[in-house]
Image (tube, rainbow, N blue to C red; front, side, top):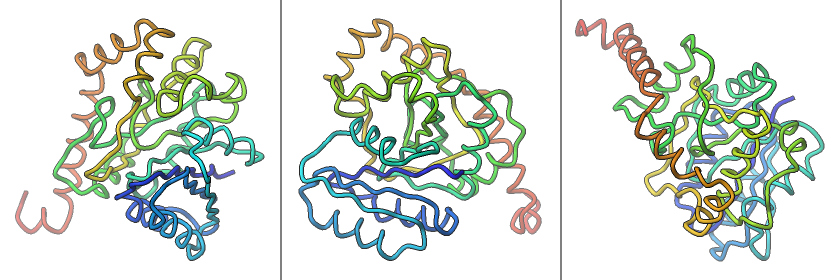
Length: 271
């Protein structure tokens, strides 16, 4: 069963049009998508999202909240309303690339104890990949490699997060009382790890982000995370400093160069 894509939206959302267009390009007919306008104050954002849901060939539904529920409550409501299958949380500034969802689903199915999966992204300090190649070329290279076992991440990362229903159920869902934003996902990942579930990178997927990308947990949420998980910031900082993903990035960059040499331009100029 294909996972449902959940796109929570709040104003301003400068990358929303590109995000929805990328879903249209990469998902099969009838693929389930849920776009939630979480109490936004800009009617143009709601009109854009609702209009796209009405026109698209995908199985899209538009939900409008009169008052903001917050990200964790929006995710919890999606799991409650959608009877089965996993949910993929997609930021409205994300631009997905060909093959992204089947690859994430295959990675999730191959790891029965994975709670959530993230992807490479150019605007993500935990799983960054910055290259002059186009997002489509990066995605093509990432999807055409034999990767080792997916590496673990210390927190929820990037513009896309694949959430396993089984793990959400086993862990009691997201903490909607302590967190209003992305911090609930960081907390979920730590609780998952503590109970033997994984928070992993899916190295076969690259998802681009817009120039005005949203951040992660707010300062107040980081403080609450630090109280609950005293080593939270230390682990994230150590992960960034030690950069265990560097060998994987180097392999991906080499694969991009290799594929570029086999194309028409590479043959023509002998690169």
